[in-house]
Image 1 (tube, one colour):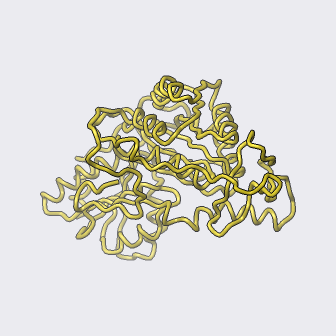
Image 2 (tube, one colour):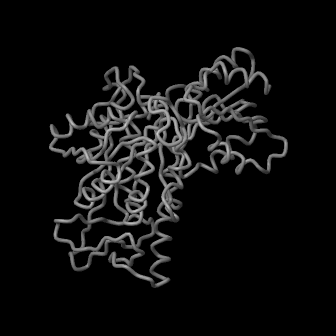
Length: 399
C-alpha cells in the first residue's frame, strides 16, 4: 500500500498492490469492496447465510463468482456455512463466508476446527449492535475480543480491521493471502458504517495484485505428512482428489492427522499452531502511525472510530494541540512491540471504541509501567457513532 501522506507511516505493511498509475477511480461500498477484493485474490467458493449488515457481500458474490467459474451456495444457517467453506478448502478451493455478530457466534466451533485442522479460510464479520439480536442496522465494535477468544481452547488468531473502503478491498486480499500462507482461518472485521458507506477509491489493475497460493506438496503421496514440521511452521497442504491420502479430525492429532493422546505429539500440534503466528509476527503485524512524530496526546482506535479520530486530530492541530493516531490494522496478534514504542513519549492516550471497553484493556496491559501516563476511554454501545466533535472535546479536556 502506498503512503497516503508524508506523516502517515504503516509499519511492516506487506505491499499488496503496485503500479499506482494504473488505478481507476470508482464509487464503491465497503461490503462491495470486500467482495471485489476476495475475487481479485482468487476466491473460488463462498457459502453463507444472509444477515444484516453483511448481506451485500453474499449478493455480489452470488452474481460474480459463477462468472469466474467459482461456486456460491446459500446455506441454511451460519453453522452450515463455516462447515461448507472448510470442506471446500480441504478440496483445494479458496473459501470465504461473511456474517455479523450473531452468526459469528454460531461459527466459533467451526472456526476452532479450521484452526486445529489448519484449513485455510476467511470469515468476514461486519459487526452490528449487540447483545444477542441487538441492533441489526447500527454500528458496533463489540466483537473485537470474540474474534480472538470466541473459540474454545488455545487458538491463536489472525484478525484484520480496515478503516476505509479502499482498505476493505486490500485487506480482503490480504486476509485470503494470509489464510493460504499460514493454513488457518483469518477473520476480517468491519463495522456496519464501514460496510455500508461509499467512497470514491482507486483500485489497482488486477494484474498488479499480489496473490498468495497455498504451498503444494512436492513429495510422493506415500511420503506426505499433512502436518509436517519446519522452521517457519508453514507446511505444504494437499487437497482431496489429488492422489494424496490424509486424515482430518478436530481431535488432537499426529503429523499424519490421526487422533493421538501421546503428550509429545499433542505438544507438537499446539506449538505449531502458536508458533506459526509468533514466529512470523513481523509478517503479520500492520500498524498505522498518523501524525505521531511530535504527539503528546495519542488516540488509539480502529475502524470507523479511527476515521472520526483523524478528523478530530486535524481540528486539534489547528487548535495547537499535538495529537496523533495509532491504528492497529492487524488487531490480533496484537502489535505489542510497535504500540509500546510509539506510545513511549506520549502523556495521554484516548481510546474511542463502540463497545463497553475492549481495546482499552490491551492498552492498560502494555502501559501499566507508565506511572505518569493516563488512558481516557470514550465508549458507546447504543448504536450511535463517536463523532469527531466528541473526540475533540475530550482532547481539549485532557490537554
